Structure formats: C-alpha cells, structure tokens
Image: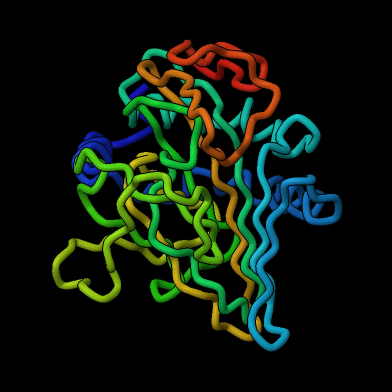
Length: 266
C-alpha cells in the first residue's frame, strides 16, 4: 500500500494537510480530458457557472457525474487513486464521496476563495483526502494553495459559494480569516504542476486559488474526494450541503455504506 506513496509524502500530508504527488496519473490525463469534454457538453443540473467580468472566460464547476460519464468511472475504479488515498489516510477501507470538475477558461477572473471543503459536506470524520489532478500545466501563480496545518485547528469556517455569497445564512460559523491580507502569518503551500501530477489534501485544510488571468491557457482540474475508516454520514437539518445528495437515506452517524458511495478499497 505505502509503496505507491513515499513515507515523507505521507508524513507531509498528515502534518500539513496537503502534499504534492508527481506524475502519479500521467497515464490517465487523456482519459480524464475526454471525460471533462463529455461533461461540459452535457453538464448536470447542479453545474455552477461563474462568468468573468466584461465577458471574460467562465469558471465552470460540476460534480457527481461518475455514474454517467464512463471516463470518470474508469479512472475511479481502475486507477491507483484509491490505493494512494488509502496510503495517505492510513485507512483500511476507502469509499468514493464524489468527483468534482473545475474548469477556468482563459481570462476567467473569478478566484476560488479560501475555504475548507468539509463544512459544505454531509460528512463528519478526519480520514479524508481530495486528489486534485490538473489536466493542463499550472504555473505557481495560478495554482491551488493551502494553509499548512489548518486541518488541525479544530474549526469549521462558514461555507460560501465561489461568488462569495453564503451557502447558509446565519449558520453560526465564523468567517474564513483573511489569508491573502495576512500571508506572512501563515505557511502557505503551493506547487507548479504538470498534467498527471496531483495535490492531496484533507477536507478540513484551508485552500484557495487565484483567477486565471491568462488570455490563452485554460485550467482544467479533476478532483476526487475519498473517505476513510472514521467518516460518518452527517445530517445537517436546515442546512444546505454541497453536493446535496438528495436521495441518500442514511441516518445521522451511519457508516457511508450506500450506492452513492461505493467501496473502492478494503
């Protein structure tokens, strides 16, 4: 299991809440690009499209399409992603939570604001990992960034949509701190990336990404959300979750054993 991921990479992931994995999915890049093309041609009802200012490029996000897009399904069930996630989390079992595709077209001047993923989700637990896989070259100035160690702060910050509107008004959660205005107070991690690299991060790690100000280069990314041994279903009454998982019938606190969350390893 651990032979797929170097021990120092596992240590960095658990210490910092984020790490980089070089070239681990190079053989899957074209498959995922084909899947993204299929997805964009026929997005789901939950697609989010943020238009840049003055007709600039779009920022498109869509999720939970793995059961209808064969390229996604092929990658999820046949790549080494689950085993890499298993090694990073130290879990016996790995389940799929969902996949999330994020496309910033050339000139998409909509940044990804600093946020944690878990406050959006219908899950509790700490054995979590997202594998964010770029399908285009991503220079350091356009890459996803992370606040090292923020997954251990013991906090849930207020979730917002990527256009900065609150996902849930008056949810009682504190706002995300001003990372960009106080970068010297934090250890901010980020890496220039090539197609087939991946960054792995915990659902509680604060992260964000700048706008794509390139006039010619897009930034396509496929993100796979995986769950380990201690993750349980969380019913948040009166609270919107994203993805909504409208048809899931699990009870609060239940093991994530449902058709929507297939077992990938263990």
